[in-house]
Amino acid sequence: MKSMGEMLIRREAFSEIVMGNTALVRAMVEAGTRVVTSYPGSPTPEIAEAIGSIRPDQRPFYFEFSTNEKVATEIAYGAGLNGHLSTVFFKSVGLNVAADTFVQLSLMNVIGGMVVVLGDDPGANSSQNEQDNRHIAEMAYTPVFEPASPTEVYRFYKIAARLARDKAMPVVLRLTTHVCHAKERVHFDPYRPEPLDPTPRFDPANGPYIPIASAVFPMKRRALERLQSVATLSDASDWHQIVDCGNPDLGILTAGLPFLSVLDALQDGVSRKPDILKLGLIYPIPRNVVASFLKAHRCVHVIEELDPILETAVRSIAQEEGLSVRIIGKTQLEHWIGEYTPDKVRQILEAQWPELFVKAVQPASPSPTPPEVLPPPARPPQLCPGCGHRSAFYAIGKALRETDITVADIGCHTLGFQPPYRIGQALLCMGASMGIASGLSLFQSERKVVAFLGDSTLFHAGLPGILNALFNRHRVTLIVMENGTTAMTGHQDHAGSGRNFNVPTDAVSIRSLLEGMGVQHIFEADTYQQSVLTDLVRKALDIDAFSVVIARHPCMLKFMREKRRKPDFQPKQVSIDPAVCRKIQECVARFGCPSFLREADGSVRIQTDLCIGDGSCVQTCPAGAIRRPHAPRSSETS
Image (cartoon, rainbow, N blue to C red):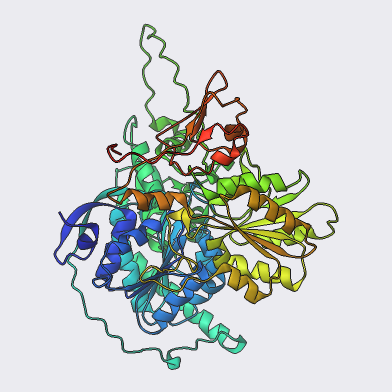
């Protein structure tokens, strides 16, 4: 049995069941991609996992995790200028970080070609919003492919890469969460590797590459001309699909994952199925393909997630062509929100075309009342057992007054806003906590303002806010939650980890970095030293200037995963001495480790399947009833 890495570089054609993110990497390999960059963020981290499964000496392209999405985009762009086919990938809101660079790319002559892979997130499964990045692609005059399945991820990447190279331009491959994570059997073509030609191809004569006022108009004209040529190509291509059900009255126009939901919604209980036009390239919209479909139907329903982008384009085509076809789009606010699951799509279609859907015949005699099915209980996200952030929040909470203001940032520590800690009263985006906290500190004479930053976020986007606090003398206390990894998205390395994706590197010391920037008041403690951390936070809050507390502890999920791989691993758990326990429940009510379970009589027991035996909870018990784990005897088995 071949490993994933061996599969991804197999020379012969084959088929395998893979997720969309994995199919994408095989497409990169086959297309001759030479440089790939990223910043980790769901739903795209599995792309990097698949890349990492290929042995470095066999990997046909260079890959790195950059410090943020903007830098990743610029590295990929630079490689494209030098003649190498490049790709950058990141999550939906990552495009916000990269936007300053991204919106310029179509103006340039990217001779190697460049594919931008977006992991958009309808439903906000792992994001702070549902933003529809098709808007930004339109603003940037950049073509957008939207696959519906892993097979189309594979196929459309190869098409996008070829188009990007032929037109010397960027092309977007817009994935959504369930396309990234869906699995199906994909049939892969043979892989015919070509040796890397490192010859530098950057030539200023291929430009201009400097968008100053005198050059902008010609550059924009070239971008629009390329976009028009892509639209013409799209009209004559096989990128789109028509499901012909022989229905001249009703049609559905859709793209991406909603297409599969339409098929599911129409599978059963339908008297007559509408025809379906599924677009592969959604921007620029294939005008002739869409116009022909509109002309052939009396009524067309546009089914798309999030914003009415296709709907607006379709209505424009109908108006300009003078067509009498009725176009139905989003008719309720709820149609702008959430994923288009098969159930939701069926409800939308049934509301407009009730005559299509066969009503179930009620039995003559009443059937037995089915048992009530209760919804599953809510399962809010929580910090892992042993997480250093839990100890930090428990200790920091003792130093804060009720009137103090706490500002959260993006990362695992965002969960501090939940009970029992309730630390983090405002949140926006990566690296924003320092700027928000600085604004909140203005005109504050009594209330202290505390900002939080994870170490990965600090390197990603936190440094400008810190520099601004120093420059403008904002009286804010920053707590850096340092756990040595990008934990929230799968333990990717960052500049302070001592390793990049490929090799060990010198770790960037956060303390040295802050000192170099001019921060004068810096305190450090391991978060398991709870009383020490509490005292340091109090000292930092008493300083009438910008101060920093580095609250450090390794990510215990990563630590335990590595420990469990060792052959001599033996699990341990803490225990509770019932003779000592006074049922104060500090461990449950304020420390909040999920390993503790409160019984009906007020006593507390340990869930041994969750407890990792780290012992950070021992110091939280006022009665001293929590016992540290004992080392197993040599005769005991794990």
